[in-house]
Length: 325
Image 1 (cartoon, rainbow, N blue to C red):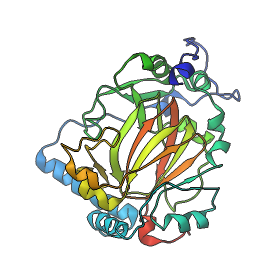
Image 2: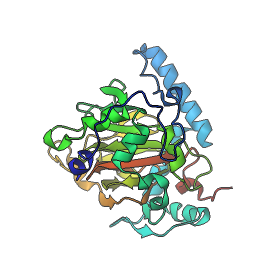
Image 3: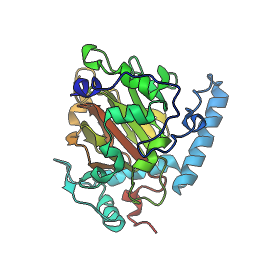
Image 4: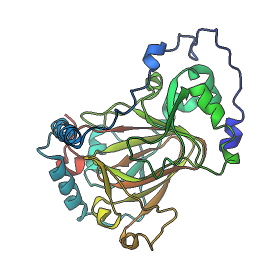
């Protein structure tokens, strides 16, 4: 399916026209499409420790907690009281109060009939190419699974049009397809109507790529709403306290990766992973998945896919149980 969609993209490269969106308005200026700077050169151990401590202090202040480490432990402790998750339930559209009541239970769930109403859901890959082809994107390239949480992983910057051309024949290459992941694409924000489920939220982050693009197993210690805009994704989920079976590695205070792959389990290397309770779900276009803080998840595109997510910037709901003010 990814190939069929992508190969329908027109290869025109007319560059002397002022870009406009589908309503005929001028597209965002080039300055609005600049990518964030690349990671700094390596720091000394002392400087790296000072930066880490400063970031953790800021992270704690943003989330209204005294310590990120204590927050992580509280999430794992709460997780031990959760019932087993045999499947991820689907519910209809929820208002903020109903969402927070459901989220306070500490379990993932999928909301239907919400994202499908967003204007962005109506755009095809060809529409994206025509309307936003000059938008600058940053693609993960090479073996981005085994370097997923490294600061120096391989990236390639290019216009969106060029990226869509690059992955048009992704099925012909057995390697990992280039993947635009965890990227702000502000020109698309007005086409998404995010519900006000959290007191504070970070900016939307977009994920774009053909089938077989993957984000390996990891957890974020922030509540997360994940919108599947086009295509479908397979997601594996494991509760926070099962990190003891998943060989976690710290990327930063609120992000931990795991080398275990639930799609190709290697129990010889990771024997404890046999005890991890992993639940698989398929998130379809138009659906929104709630991933509670601390839940491990691995995400793979089954088709050409466009997703977006937003992380809460507040105390996790499983700890507070409070609805937004």
